[in-house]
Amino acid sequence: MDKLKIKEAVKMMLEAIGEDPEREGLLDTPDRIARMYEEIFSGNFESAKTHLDRVFSVEEDGIVLEKDIQFYSMCEHHLIPFYGKVHVAYISNGKVTGLSKLARTVEVFAKRPQLQERMTNQIAKALMEYLNPKGVMVVIEAEHLCMTMRGVKKPGSKTVTTAYLGDFKDNESLKNEVFRMISLS
Image (cartoon, rainbow, N blue to C red; front, side, top):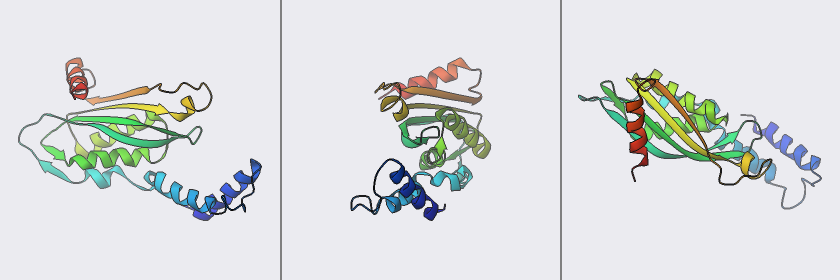
């Protein structure tokens, strides 16, 4: 990541909106934004494989659900945040991964300029590729600030996206079981 370029761009943006980047309150803003971008776009420099490489053998195969994984991402169209919850389910195939690894996988894809629809599918495909489960289901519920603070201005509206791979693709009973599990308190 080129932090110097980011700082220069922020200074130019501040000037373009009629601000003085040398003003006391804005003097350190370019550096703050460069450091923030390093954090919130860190997924550009990470692979889900790093997190999903560690697996453990299990005797019984069943549905594993990690629900309500909080995430924050940046809409690639407006560079404004969207945030919400990810629910990740997979059917083990003799192997499981640590639960924290599922949350870390979500972070890899959330910490990029992103579309919710793409992120949903990227998470599902990474789990299929690196865990080799019988099936994967990903559900994301998110609020997009590009919908709530600008444009149409509809606060509280949520976008829900899903991805179904493997055994989940055409099995309504399995999908319904996961939706039931998600709705449990």
